[in-house]
Length: 534
Image (cartoon, rainbow, N blue to C red; front, side):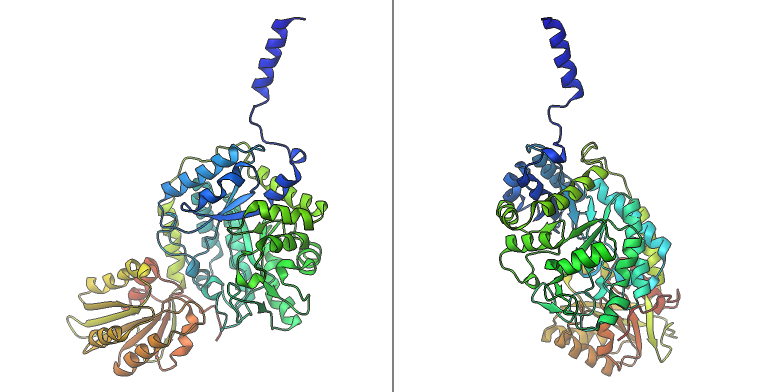
C-alpha cells in the first residue's frame, strides 16, 4: 500500500469536503426537520433561553423582538444567534425575521432601524414607484443586519372602523389601493433580497375584536369575503410573495376552525384554489385569539392544517417537537421542513457570509420617506378656509397641544420649528395620551388668548380615549381658530364633528410633523387622500 498516496488523497478530501458542512435535507433527523418549522421569539435579554435548542439544531428561525438597541448591538446579537446555529450538528443557519411594518407596531430607535411610515400614510400618498423604492432600500438595511424575513405588509382591507387592532397598519378600506401598495412593498423587499410575508390571511380587516386578547369571528358576508378581503392576497400571490401569515379568526362559512388550524383554509383555499407555493407562517401562537394555552398543541394543529412555520413564541422547542412528532404525519412534516430548507438555500445562507459589512442607506431612505409623506398628509376639512393661515399680526401667537406617548416627543418638536422660523410666538405642550386634570389646566392655559390653536389627537385604532376627547372638545369650543391634527388613526376624526379644520397625519414622524406645519402656513399644498371611509 502506498502510504504517500493515501495521505495525499486524505488531504484532498479535507480540502474539497469541509469538516463543518451543513447536512443535506435527507440527512436530517425527524426532530431536526420539525425544528426547521419552528420560530421562537428572542431579544438580547432572553436569548440564552434558546441557546441549547439552537445549538442542537432544533430551531428553524428567530423572530427578533423590539428593543432600544443600536444597529451594531442588533447585528452582534444576530451574529451570536447564528454562531450557536453554526455549532449545531446539522450546521444549518437560522432564518432571522422581524415585524417591521411601521405605524402602531413600531416606535423610534428600535433595533437601530429607521423610523418607518405607517401603511395608511403610504396609502394616502398612493405612489407605487416611490413605495417600492423605499422598501428596496429598507431591504438593504435589513440584510446589512443579517435579517432575512420581514412580516410585512399588512394587506387586510380595513372596512370596519371599529377594528381595534389593525388601524393604520392597514392601507385602508379600498381593496385596490390595499392590493397595489401591498404589491409595491412586496416587490421592493423581495427585489432587495428580503422575504416578504403578507398578513393576515384570509383577512383581518372586518373584525371588531383584537385577536391578541380573544376569539375573533369574521362577520361580513361570504360574497364580501371573496370580493373584498381575499382580493389583496390574490394580488400578492400574483406578485410572487414568498410568505403569507395566518389570521387567528374563524370564518363560519368556510370552517368552524380558526384559519390557523383549518386545512380547508390553508390547504384547500390558499394552496390549491389560490395556487400559493410559498411558506405559510402562523401568527403568534401565544396570542389569546389562538385559543389554546398549550402552544405545542397549537403548533401541531397548524402544521397539520397546512402551515409551514409555527411561531411558538417563547415555548420550549423540544416540547413542541415532541407534540408535532406525535400528532402530525411525516409527509406533512417533510413538506413543511423542505420548504424552509429550500428557502435557506435560495437565500444563499449556506454559502454567504452571515454578517455582511454595513452600507449606509439612511439618506436614501429619508429622501423617499419625505417624498411619500409630502403626498400623504391630508386636509380632510377646511370649512372656514383657515388653511392657509393668514394674519396681520407681526408676531402671531400659536398654541400647540398634543396628546401622545413620550416616545414621540422628539418627532413632534419638528412641528414647532417652521412656525418659529416665521416669527410666531409658540407655546407648546405634549400632554399625556390619557390626560389628567393637570393636563387640562395646562392645555387651557396654553390656548388662552392665542391667535391659532393646533390640537393633536391620538388613538391607536378605534379605541376612543374619553379624557382626551373631553379636553379636545373643550379646546375646540373655547377657541375660534383651531386646527385638529389626527396624529395616528384617522378614525378618531369622527369623534369631533364640530371641528371645522382637520388634517390627517397617519403617524407621528419628523416629516409628517414638519409638512403639517408647512400646510397650515400655506408653504405647501396638502396632497393626500383619505384612504378610509367612516
